[in-house]
Length: 493
Image 1 (tube, helix red, strand yellow):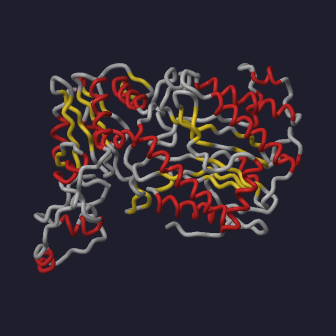
Image 2 (cartoon, one colour):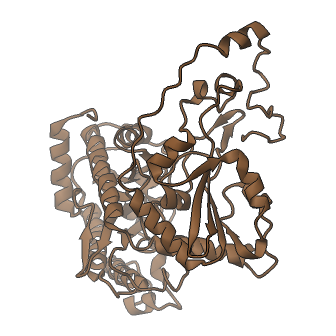
Image 3 (cartoon, one colour):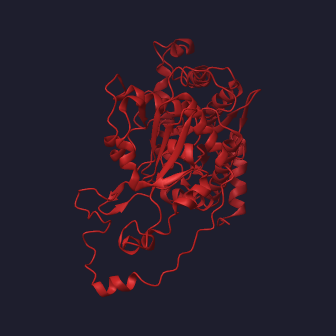
């Protein structure tokens, strides 16, 4: 909870179960502290953030823009989830601290940017040792000057934000809403048209930032590659401890990958999907309370989020025993052919939905070969039918970047109905899923789920698979799994 809330939490940042300290202790704690500056230097990527702010400024001349990062979220009682900054805020500032707010105010020729933040605990009050935000509890925060030096961005104390927001005219202000309830309440929405439940003016701000994120610059591509390379190492870690002849829990495999993510990056980019056997047919299986079985397949959809929050998103399917059965291989090869066709179709100017149709036709043809389609491939592909989707459900992929589903506020005509451009990064992840209860498929297919997912950069001439460090063909997967098992377990170093 943030300070000043009236939910039973004391407004000084202490908790209701904190003791009432005697004055002698308080007086003693206020003495004898040195003041050491953090050794901060300008971060080399700050020019990238400045360029993004300049582009956003140009899109909204003469208007004030308010972009909050969000607040900590309660997990249980007085414990919070680990804070992860708002993606749009981080994209524009590089700042990772909770409660901060970026304000861009027009200056006649552009905008003046100010980062409102919670500075380090002052020794002039007891906050530094009594408050849940105090640095003896959560660590040293930056001073305003330190943060400004690091990010190349003017800063101001968060306590001054309320007065700043109160001075803004609704008709000339846009707010990225839904991240900070206090900011939302402080800036009255403009009484105009509404889009998707929020003021259209504010929605236009969210759209603009999303569409800026479609094209990745060289630094962003490097960040994604680092996250993907760490993800490759995480998959290797899992394969090295996956036994061929006995069961292990899905959560053990999830935990091994999570160790790599925390060591080499910030965290996992999303809840890891580790689906053994029939759990592989559940698209967003995150309970991970099952276990592997020799002879079954293991689907793992996992990605490392790097330290600057760019995330990988990769899926591989492994035969637990080390070799695919003939039927497993047949289905796997259909999915691989679909993915390969999609990757080969990618280049600037190709429509997103045409890549989708390319992947889906190969899946439909494979389903026909398996004898499952009740109609011809052409009939199944007709938009008035799409019966093939009973066994695939989802599209071919999505944009990837500082969010695993990046650019989600982009307009349909720019994203889903738009054309790909150089610098786009997207996943290609076709899959086939035969549910255990599906009586329209042979018994030997029920409970088989296969998805292959890679992270692809659109280049001037085609596409580059950034996650090519992991094998994709069925033969390559078997060879790679044997090599990892032979290499044996390792700790991140």
